[in-house]
Image 1: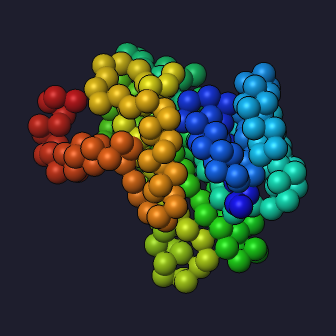
Image 2: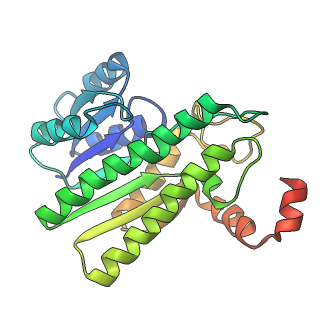
Image 3: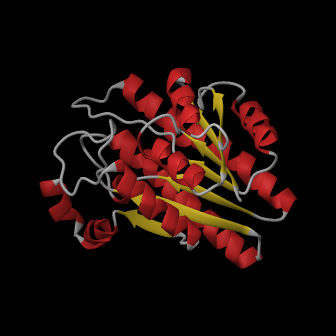
Length: 237
């Protein structure tokens, strides 16, 4: 039985991950800003799910994480799934700042907490749900692409750090394409149900993959993003 915290588990992919892990008999700490949604999730698996309601961008996030670890009696896997972004035809300061606050600042605070905890403990697994959008800039949501690129690049650095240093921490960068949640905005294709995406994420984490595309077919888009020449991408992007 593992002890797992999912930051951002009140809806979407995070909620489905919590269900899968609880159904498998693990102890799950679910966080989110909406107490009512956390309560309904906990009632589904009262013996396996514990909750901590807080805003990951607000003060005291580390304190809430520590409290949840105490409730669980330890921590083996920490998944950062909190995230937000929006489409904007102009450079909207509120949209950009909120996007960075969640996807960069809250991400960093959560990951630093997990990193230090796992180093002291001697084992652990960090995972983040970034995005296929992290691979290139996007004129419709430039802050979102940049913030998710921060997550993916940061996790690649952590992956190299753990391998080179022989550190006992596993790292997994999860890059979903379109998933049927509130975050899926604009024209969409290859849209996956949230439960299917969650199942593939669980398998990738179990296999200790350092990077995975969800669903698997999105690796094609990742490769296309990587190799398409900039003049062409800038013309069609």
